Image (cartoon, rainbow over the protein chains, first blue to last red):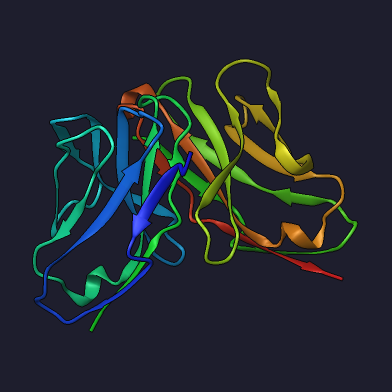
Length: 112
Length: 114
């Protein structure tokens, strides 16, 4: 099992550009989520999904879109990047909402 | 609303001495509580979890934590620090009132001196 994989590992964007962060898991987990990590703030939930076709907003959803067309994949889209979105992004998956979450290695994004 | 406060942003210990990382939580219902560790430039790894069974929870790498409902605390300890314990540690709460979403503390960075 590869677990949770994320691509790319690093990305630099200019303000206003768009991009998609990829996340995939091979554990057949129903629950997937995206977090951003900023210094001193722990991880904050951006969006989550409880199964294919179902997504919902987390704590800091503005500026991000998600979709879940398959159980395995949960991409995160930045529609128009802003410097405030400079952060490290983590994807996680779990059997269900109340189960242990498994984290990917992260994507470090810089917006200039 | 649920919340987590990690009382120390940085902890410095000498190798071979005990480690104590303090965590207080707030949750409307009986919560699930977790400790995660993040080594530099890595993802998060689960150390241990409390889900309303035994109040003293043993985790990986010699860590343990005690759930104290009266003090709303879930402190993480290890009797003897190793150099490999240098990392950032996150206390996390999850409760039904918040739809079982995870709420993270701000993190405690541990430095281990030789």
